[in-house]
Amino acid sequence: MKNDYSILMGGEAGQGSRKAGLVIAKLFNKLGYRIFIYDDYQSLIRGGHNFSQIRASEKEVLSHREKIDFLLALDENTIKKHKDNLDEQGIIIFNSDRIQLSQGIGLPIEKITKELEGIPIMANTALIAGFGKIVGIDWDIIEDVLKKEIKKGIDLNLKIAKKAYQAPENQIKIEKVKQEPLPLLTGNEAIALGAIQAGLDMYFAYPMTPASGILHYLAEHQKDFNIAVSQLENEISVINTGIGAAYVGARTMVGTSGGGFALMTEALSLAAQSETPIVIIESQRPGPATGVPTYTGQGDLLFTLFAGHGDFLRFVIAPGDADECFFWAGKILNLSWKYQTPSILLIDKQISESTFCLDRNVLDKVKYEQGLLWDGKEDYKRYKDTKDGISPLAFPGQKNVISKATSYEHDEFGITVEEDEQVIKAMQDKRLRKFQKMTEEMEKMEAVKIYGNKNSDKAIIVWGSTKGPAKEVAEKLALKMIQIVIIQPFPEKQIKDALKGTQKIISIEANALGQMEKVLNCYGIKPDNRILKYDSRPFLPEEIEEELNKIL
Image 1: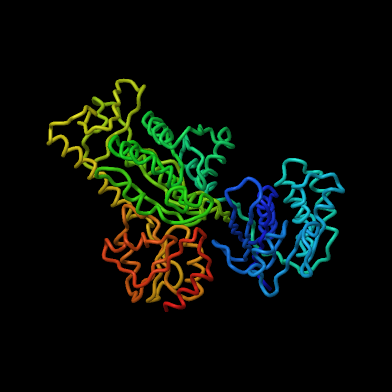
Image 2 (image 1 turned 30 degrees about the vertical axis):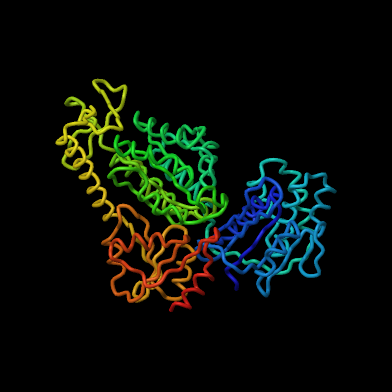
């Protein structure tokens, strides 16, 4: 029995192919399959070409693949662009009102929609239902999913779907898998939910693809979660407002992409000097400058590690799937408040906007963790010089509290010092002790993960979204795969332990300069080969396998 399917749904922007792709994924999810959805779209409101590629497998999948089993076309352009990727046994299912094709199965979806007085976008409901009939999905399942996913005009949509379902003949039978359906979430949604579970109070952002989904999701659900969400006029306002909110005690997160983060860097140093806890979500897209707004890349690693002026350390954590997004969004919020430091969750478009199955077990791994608070027994010193460098927190409005936050170097009370070199050094030493504790805590966490054949003498090193396709290939070729999750503080010991016994190291990244390789070199780890991709599209398992076979 085939247990791994690839379905591509495509059309013009405005035809609803992305929503249709999600509905198809949920049909397969209802049958027990594990899901991954890759969404590809241009920076256009109308026209152009959009598509969703759904992977449905009996096993966990974290990447789409090159070959397509079912090509669902709302327009002719979809067939032109993707027919070469159709598997030998693949089937094209197309809108016969717009497309003339000698092969495949044509469905008059626009005619059906018009006859039942539906609006044009409802034609994709007809295509979904027709596809369901062709692959043998029971009508009851289709009806159930449509009722849950379509809130407006559901009765008319169901009439259209029912008529389209009756049109084609059944071709094959997609078998059910004996597994419970799992929640489907984008990486952005998983980040939002993980942060909420760790006590998020406020979220600020200026819309910037691909992080905008976090803003939209939290804004839509802010009453459900009892949080405040605000869209501000630019990224400078976002970061400064976020720092102000954190200063008065609100657990705060902000989101952006590389260009917006560039505007935040001065305030990043302010957060470090004032020891203000704030989490920045940096979802990468190709640069420099505006680059390719709706596609993916891993070109901001070095930028996030070294952004800001002066000596300071920050947490930089790069999750590789939705489970990790949920967990690390909560964890980094707790860490930021524990150590009173800015922190960066580094993702990219492939993580942000792709849809994954979420393992319910991860839900119990995130909880609110209280930072160190002032006990009220002595005069409050915002920057009290403690053994571990972490000062007790109090907030404006508390009795007997004067809480000073400053961008200048200062004494324990927060009073500016410019000439007293001993106090200046003492406060820098205080922060350095805090950074040492951050490093020690990082070593207690799973900063590095190992997949594939752990005994192999050949290892591939990945981070972020390269995890999914690389993991699939590592398991197929019996290689060791090392995923670096925490990048700063750098988990030197864990990586070197993971590399013991390896004779050949290959670094895999979606950037042109080998940025993680440069970081590894700083710690004496020198990969023998590299596989780089920087065309704005994510790695496919087939691409990685082909390059590894050349090297090995």
